[in-house]
Length: 206
Image (cartoon, rainbow, N blue to C red; front, top):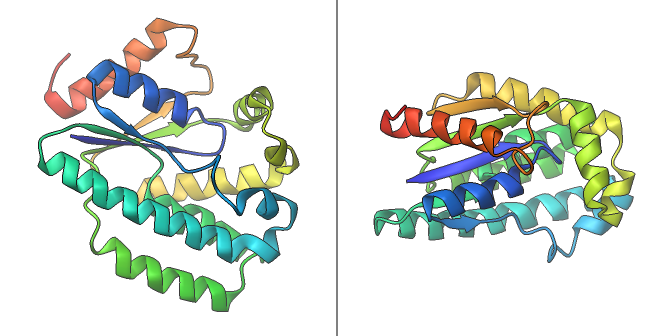
């Protein structure tokens, strides 16, 4: 099985991915944030580094999906933090619509994405973490990454709108979990509720 956890910056994807991987005893695949050579520059000058950042993420995510395909075909379970679909349909699209990624660069990027996505198998379950802006801001501030301090509320708001539009049209098997009032770090009941919903969807277990 392959579960992908998706959602905005600060929604709690990485934390939940770790907890689900621990629960199911599956392997976890995380987003390459700490070693990303463009991320810090991007948040300080988005128009200058948007294309570089998106191509870096796209390449890394594609390589990750190929490894996940190998593992699932070998009968192993995987929990993935963010997907290749979000790179194109959420982040690159938002940058383009916001005027931070030129049409020339966006068209080039999207053509590359379309070539790659034809070789990608969708997850068995897409778990979308819906979070309001106050939740996102609290969690971004709590983790204290210097380069994230310059993220604007407007940027997060636009990403949320893109996520809602995208998930409304997503045709694969998925669950939407509103995490605005959940705390699966401190409250085991909240984590248990999410796991129950996953089991019900994937295995018909209640």
